[in-house]
Image 1 (tube, rainbow, N blue to C red):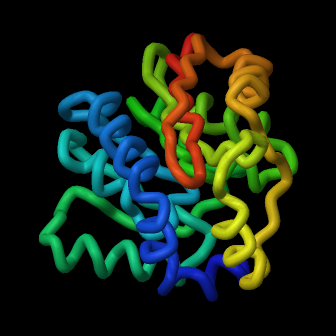
Image 2 (tube, helix red, strand yellow):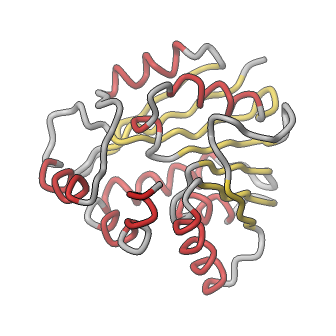
Length: 202
C-alpha cells in the first residue's frame, strides 16, 4: 500500500484537477443510493463517495486497505459533522460480511487497478441483497483523452494500473461477471469515467 499511503494527503487535490468528471460521479452516487440504504464503500480512498452516499443512506461503511486514506476520510467526516459513516480496513477481494448484508456496494476508481476485477465485482455482489445495486465508476484510461499529464504526475509517485478500459471494454467486463443487469454511462473530464451500475440478480 506504499503508493496509496504516500498519496493520501494529496489525493483530494489531485482529484480536483478532474473536477467535471468527479462532480458528475458524486451526483451519480446521490441519484442511485435510495433513502435509508445500508451502504458498503470499498477502496473508498478519502471517502468522497461515502460522503455523497451518506446524504440519503441510513449507514455507510467506508473501507480501504490504506489506513492513511481512511484517516483522511475520517477527519473529513468529523470536520463536517457526518455521523452515519463508520470506517474499517478491508480487502475488496475478501469481505468478511455475510451474504445479502447491504442494499448498495460501491467501489470507485479501483477496478482498473486489480488484476482480477471480476473477482472483486462478484464479491461485492455477494454481500448485496437481490435487487440491490453495485456502483462501480472507474477511469477510462483506454479512451482518447487529455489525461496524459495527470497520469504522468501519478506515475511519478509510483501509480500503476492493471487495465486501461474503454467504455465498451468496461461494460463487457462487468457483463462477464454475470451478477445482474449492467448500465454504464460515460462521464466527461480530463480523465473520463465509466460510471457503472449493476442491479444485482440472484
